[in-house]
Image (cartoon, rainbow, N blue to C red):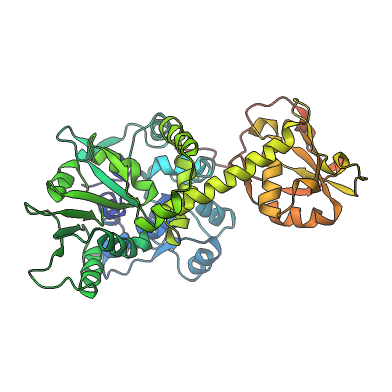
Length: 487
């Protein structure tokens, strides 16, 4: 599909890295190797997607002399841009904005900008950086937005940056026979290990490992040979469709459409190896079929000690509350741990927070809270230092959030925490004086209630004047460009 300069396009397709080429191909086809300056900018939710998009661009452009850079880290990208300007650049909105603010990146030559995937970018809170970034993009640049689901927030983003866009909808969830699928959440680099563990556990009489990319096919074929599955009569083989009588299908890549999934799975039991960000896409591909998690035996044994009440509570959260941001935050851990182990660790943190909340519950029921365990033992209170923390009532922060952060990040007990005073835009926390530097070092830059915080010793003269104003929308910062905000 040809994308002309100034044309806006919206792709709705499953969040599968094997599908990146579908929306990227018409964009990279217009990159002129003879023309210097940035021509294609791909804005992603994080460094992982940026690297995948850059790798796809490399495959699409082949041996052409086009400079492609994945801005997975701003300092490294800045050095590369200084040596040779990129014609194709991928990166998260915040990283790209850092390059612009550091004068390492100019956007006045951009001919096309692609935002992929929009709903994940919004879930990560990258919309503010995206707004400032888009203000620097030329008005006549083509805008391409990719999303797995056209939610109200995504539709608002499309209206703002790609108005009157042509829509290309993947037939991922077309009506038809529902397909039940089990899934195992893995990091991209952990798929081969997960595949081996599934084959060990299932020991199928016959199986097909579904792939969509040549690189995936080569990796899987090599693994199967090492496991003893080789030759035309091998019980497990690489393919795209299950023959009648096949016992198991493992989805190493995610199918692009519901029809492709049905063809791949046939009547066999199906297990998908997916990244957490792909779960909603898999749900759509299943077309209403049952979607159940697959627990490997060793992980299941470690998880059986969880109480049924906690399981019921977790089921309620999964069914009734949005958890996209939490899924994205935990995804990097899948490179080292099974999903059940990560969930168990999250439960342990939950139990710690609940213990901290119980320690605070005896305090006054107002927003202000005091934890004074030392006095409760009858001993004199030691020297305390008051710290200033840049989250407050308007961030929905609670005393238990602050106690939990100090306990988990700084390793302090509640005995080292004193009075907690929560105001509209900030909070103050008393901690043991000999632990103040540790708290500042370890809490600074972490997130509390989804907001990155700054912690320092409290100095009332340095507090913002607006700290006690009623909570409300924060004033929008100027984009820092004399051209103003442009679509």
